[in-house]
Length: 131
Image (cartoon, rainbow, N blue to C red; front, side, top):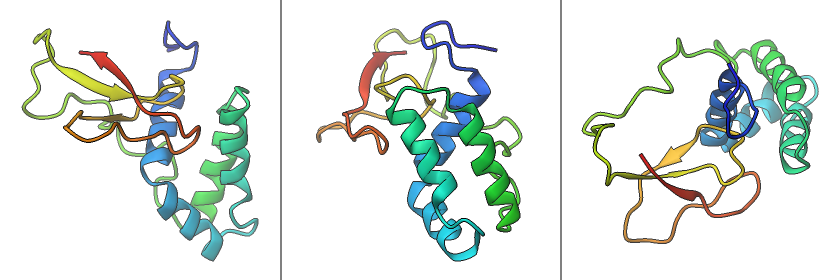
């Protein structure tokens, strides 16, 4: 299913959020165990930065991770990544969340008193949006 705002498939957005949240671990694992090293990850990051369709690069990264011994790659996880976090009432209108500034992934963070975290791909601060 495509997200109306970004045109990116929900499954792709969640997989990108998974990669974003584990970026350094994925880079380390690929560097140590993948035949191409970190090249599949770098191709995905380049596609995201350039605004290209990330699906082919994401699929290649998924396959590289599986070949390197990762049990679930980037598409695993049983659909639990998009659940509403405990303690958040989605009907509460004054709840805020920080989300991907380019709308390419489903990563989120909770605002606090410090500066908004930055996107690990674009370097832009995460965008604040009302739940």
